[in-house]
Amino acid sequence: MRMPPMDLADLSVPLAVLAVYLRTLSPGIVGGDSGELVAEACRLGTAHPPGYPTFTLLTYVVTKVLPDLPAPLDTPAGRANALSAAFGAFACYFIHASVRLCFPEDAASSFAGGVLAAGLYAFCPLVWQYSVSAEVFAFNNFFSALTVYLLLRFIKTRERSCGYLGAFVCGLAMTNQHTSILFQIPIAIFVLYSLITEPAPAPAATRNGNARTLGKSKSKVKRKKESVVSVAAESSASRPVPVAEACLKLGGAYLAGLMPYAYLPVAAYLNHVPGSWGDVLSLMGFFRHLARSDYGTFQLYSGEDSKTEGFVERCKLMAQDLSFTQGLHGVLPVLAAIGFMFLAWTGRRKRVMGFMLTAALATYVCVFHTLANLPLASPLLYGVHQRFWMQPMIIFCIFAGASVAGASALTFDSPVWRTLRRAGSFAVAVSVVLMQLRRNFAMSDQSGNYIFRDHSRNFLEHLEEDAIALINWDQLWTSVRYTQQCEDVRPDVTSINLSMMTYKWFETKKHLYP
Image (cartoon, rainbow, N blue to C red; front, side):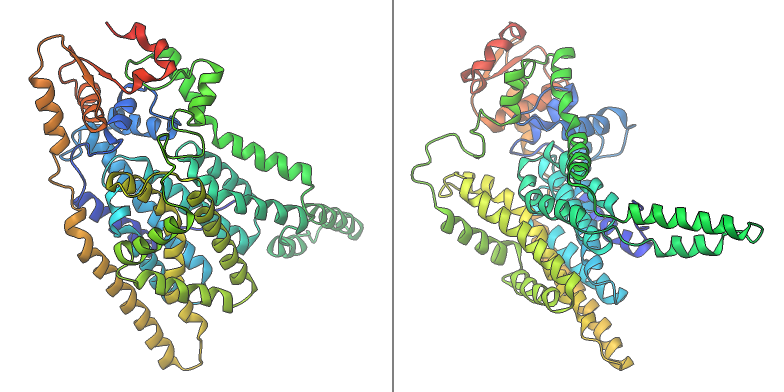
């Protein structure tokens, strides 16, 4: 499949987002899992379940292989944060490109709609927060946005190679964040059904070219034979794909995307690092790690959840967050509703696009809020749960962009109307994005955040030589682990995570400690 070229105008969108992200980039590790994830990348260890091999390998490259760079990219944490920023910025590119795919009729209006969608997404506080620090969520945003883009491109072109590439990307996404499968389920069903029931698009240009280039010097009989062979070949290629063949190709591409998981046992065998998670050297331990059994498979929380909120309450909280915290006090959901109506109103292909986007969104919201079991009364656990709303927000922002791009469907013959429509599209898009940027800049600017760097260094510097530090607080553990493993501060100190010692697999780690 040939991807369409990225022109300078389209490229300006992710570059502008990346410039803002780099300006507000955290110079060091932040809270959450950031320190642990980067530490495992520095030593090629095993991160907490499900292991995040794609994140680990890519972060290792930027922290170890790249030459010296100026601050804040002069530390492993700064480089890992910049990698997240790049993935976050190009997630916004595919959101922008998805809007343009939906409404190609008017390049100016569709570009404005793409800018609106990308800007609303990039500069909402939740996405911004996880795009300026080393975390797996910016990667998940990228893979999810790319999956949606490939879906829309498949609907538009029916290129079979696009479906197979999408299957590979879906497999790769699963090596980073398991919630990506909630987009993949309806998409996989649709792509498989399309492949086995619909013929491939007729290669009209190729056919016409073949007809013209049958050489004049050839005999009439030879031309006839070649024409018959050519038509027969094209007819065979354009038939629907047999079920077994479609399943084999899609499944093979998906499994190829999952290959980074092979890193986990290989790395554990070659480089058994103290402080890494799990027993991935045994087959059962590997699959337990892959299935997140330590936390509860298909759950976020392994503690007491009998008093946690129900499905309806979780959906209400998401709607409130989407409307008032992330979406400019209701601007995002209103624009998304208008964009959905434009897609439903302007032709069969756009209706299919709108239906599939809605199916992916509904699957995610329903399944995730049914299985998620974190008690949301706790601000800390609410924040953990909230991070998983970034993925469905991709579709809301595409719908919002369609509200501006869809103005091209209101086409009248008047040149004055076209000029006003395009000027209005840009005015709305730029105004909304600037409001989102201005509203959230101060809270999202992490360029002066040295809290966890200073905290971990102060902790380590006051320990005696060859001390053993037993740590039972995640924020201290992840920051200390990063500081020791990546910046080589106080390597004489043995740090042990007490919560790890409660798991059965820790028995396989005891020999790594004094």
